[in-house]
Length: 252
Ligand code: DGL
Image (cartoon, rainbow, N blue to C red; front, side):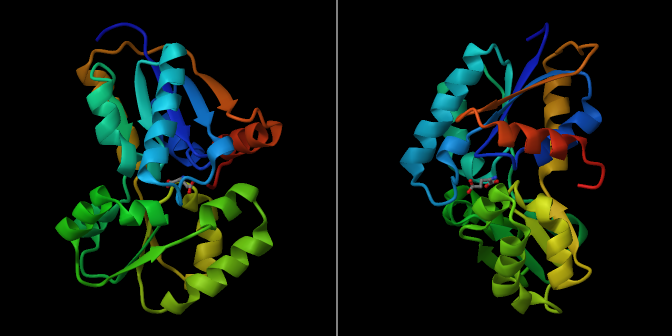
């Protein structure tokens, strides 16, 4: 596949901006469309069928917009829909994020680890295969029901309360934290305030590398300028603003 590339990126909301941000670091000059599906947020508690239908609909939309590569910037959507999408849209490369548990295996195998992800991700077959493959027998699994939603709404007080109620018990016990939902990198600072000096593992960097390799392999031409179009499924202006803040923020 040669010629111009158009990269579609989607998530249930603004969390996937943390993935796009990593992508832009190594592929700055591309044409991007980011689809924030606030209408169906959160994905974490939805059934497999619901997620498949939602992801299929978004894919159709991105293809109509002439995207040539699609990045699933949501762990829940990736875990539940990537096999289906790859099977259905055989000519489109799908780059899918997954919780960075292999990175723990590669770089910090000895250390106790907390994996934070949505309930949907943790119950998925894809995640369980990953977990069994790289299990270091010192790993705590925490389905963070409702957390992505709280982050999406951006209420700092609520975020702090959630973390105190749910992750404080791991303080002094875990050294690694896998941010298994693309919303969680947005609260690294608050997690550190509760858990102390932990090491974070985030799958976004691998997604960016995978995308770059795929484009090189497919002979996709590099564009000369960067364009980022933002779409929210409810047309919310507040999401658009938050999205560009994340993309432009230096320390996030
Ligand atoms: N950002 C998401 C993920 O990586 C989805 C969060 C949600 O909508 O529940 O799983």
